[in-house]
Amino acid sequence: MKENSNGNNVRVRFAPSPTGNLHIGGVRTALFNYIFALKYKGKFILRIDDTDRARSKKEYEDAIADDLRWFEIKWNEFYRQSERTSIYEKYLNSLKENGLVYECFCTEEEILKSKEIAVKSKKPYLYNGRCANLSSGEKEKLMLNFKEKRIYPSVRLNIAKVLRTVESFKPVEFNDAVHGRLSFNPKLIGDFILKTEDNRFTYNFASIIDDYDIGITHVIRGEDHISNTPKQILILNALGKEPPVFAHISLLYGKDGKIMSKRDSAANIKYYKEEGYIPDAILNYLAVTGNTFTAYEYKGGKEKIFEKEIFSNILEMADFFDIKKAKGSSAIFSEDKLRYINEKWLTAMPAKQLIKVLIEKFQAENILNKLQETYGENLYSEIIGFLKNEFKTVKEILKEIEIFFEDFDIELAGIKFDHELKQALLKNFQNTDDFGENSIKNVIKETASQNGKTVKECYETLRLFVTGRLDGPSILKIIKFLGKARVVKRLSV
Image 1 (cartoon, rainbow, N blue to C red):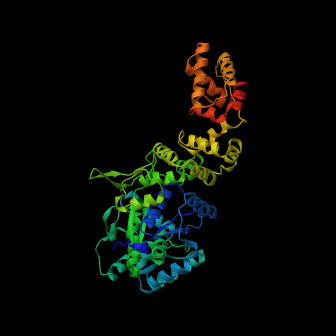
Image 2 (cartoon, rainbow, N blue to C red):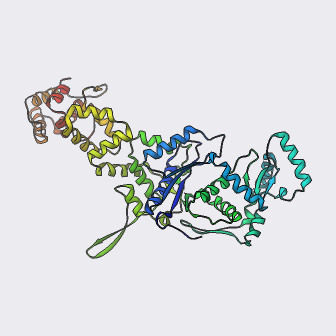
Image 3 (cartoon, rainbow, N blue to C red):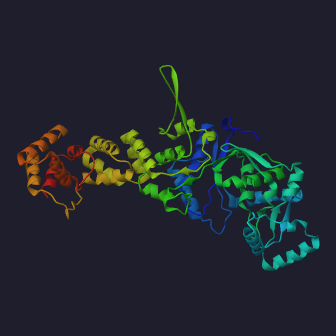
């Protein structure tokens, strides 16, 4: 099996199951595939693995697609497994014609009993191959019984026959792009099911058939699928097909040490949208979590090697990406680190670009239009430029924008303040027309001196009545943006 990553021959896929919402670990898998495709100018395919009919829902499929669009992860082709059963039947028939599969009449209850016995014996469960050697008479009798129950015999791969076909009883081996050479004893795999008794194709069969049929060159997925890989290679061996390159990336773990999954609220993409994390910043964080980006810098004629952490866009991320440097061990998710990277993205982003992100990704058009209408084009951009350097998330920025309008209430319950100092500040601001930062600073110093107060006390009183809050970014800049009329009005409360 040769690694092929030349030019536009590269074809990768992201294959989520629509049994729940896309989670943060799933986004990371999609990202690794996407930037790999970008790096080699290949194709990124979205495939919905909806073979689990009972749990798959169209609403989850739509939500997954919407989340990928929010991150601007764009697919070149789209497939849905539920629409490809005829293709699976074609390949299964090929295996039947070559005598490499057999019908299994063991019921779920019987298999469950066997598994329980294996657990009690502290041995791994392996199907005993009982149905591989049934006589035609036994099969006929069992088939009649199944028809009465309106179920079908499952179909299993006959591993012994497959190994004889490829003339190899050696271990199933493959070069994993992340983990290196991996080897599995086929005797410890057992004849596994390709099609179930409810006439449904299993994950291992449908997945690898799709990968081969749509020309996937590299399968980049979580390391929890490593145990599936030898089974999928055996299926391809049985069909006489070459397997793709496999790369099993580390899973994403929460701070509790548990794998982040779609059932974990902290892994839900909705949470990160509501908290105001920029999609590109999330992708940047996910890329560097459990992965190393090596960069080179030349100074004074010497080459310096360092790990790059912050990227300007996804194309730069793809340019530095090397799947072989993805870590094989678990990656720990840290929201503190995500906030740090989000802050870096906010700081580096021009105000006009941030405005576009606020409108397109966070539906903030109404409040931004109101800000623009109230303060004019130039001051509007300046306010956004100021706020983006003061906060770590979009949520914090949008909340702070509220103070620039008249319709907010100052909650004074339980807050002590100096009424006389407030009146003195009001009088001095009424008597000044220069609302530049230096002038505002001088008014505050003068008020403190006249009233035997500290400058800090003046700032605290000002902030309380001008913003309705006890803390926040530079009150000097806020006062400058608000202007004399609004500041005087708020101090008059």
